Length: 474
Image (cartoon, rainbow, N blue to C red; front, side):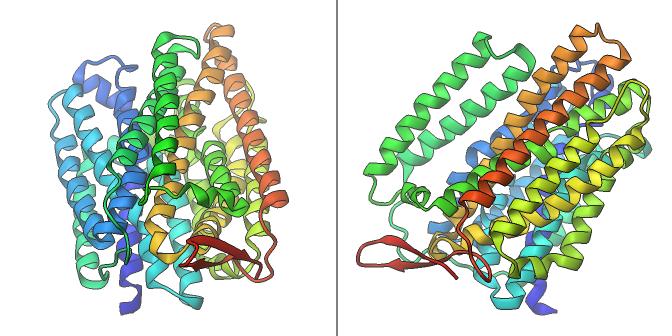
């Protein structure tokens, strides 16, 4: 039992930080009512957390490699717990949004270290089990956010969606202190301040621009200016990293086709599987009249339940399968699930979503753990924090991208239909069809480009003389 304590610690933290990405979705109307705030302004209660999380993940992973993954994870847990309390006692929307930014900072420190801790702690069969459980928890947490938020908001208060984090954070701290050993890169070198600054600006500006695109449109100055600033900062980041002796992100990793395609698939996967959820929740509550709990049950439970089942009963088997097939076919399953949900129409009830959500959950449950373990197996162990931070960063950027793109499609359909109930269903159907296209493209890329392996992920060795990654097929 003791050997699973690090897994428990990591899964508790992962569940906390991912459930808080979406937990506020169904609570926004209640928060707006308490504060007398505009509902649109309160979207930043959702978006501020996502922005901080996406912008700081890679920098946090680099810090963890250099100064200790356990220490960074513990620091993130403490910051997350304190900021959750600040969210719960916030007197107005401005204070709540500021606390959510702080919560995102803590979440980034946690998320950037989870994969590295698992990768360095477990080996062989145990490694397959650990990544299977972690993947199931990751998929279930993102999907379960609206359900947990609905239960707490309807039966207690929206403030409890943040207060509930405190005992779980305490449990995660206890398990981490008891079972997680410290680790760091043996030759990490100095911290890459220019790389960290330029990447944080790039990720933050791009995420902000995507958020604004959903509200203002793609051609608005509020969208174009931050997107342009993000692109400039991204170019500066590339130049800085190419010249750095100790880069925060070794861009040479992207010369490995397997690494590059897994990162691209992570971006598209999170857009396709999870970014539609805010709009299905709007349809369930505002058009069909479901309360927060019913909306969570219909819009989240089938996906999270299916994801957990895959992790519980097939996690180890998936780790032994070819990553090319497990990830590629899992993405095609997500595409099929999105298409099944897109059958929603003006006279549909909420149950029309359930079959498709189950398919998405099964696909996500297969993709998330195998994708993570395959990518980490493709980099030297001392760069686990770097690789894990990059993977989780692109997952969050994919979620933000999906929310922005789907939001524009959804809002245009509603506007064209002059707010009629059927227009909401049409908008939701259109977003789901686009989500299916994202998953389909990602699945095809993986099946074509990911290196074929016979028994597991890509094997990588590190040449210390030439400092180059050598890829061989298993």
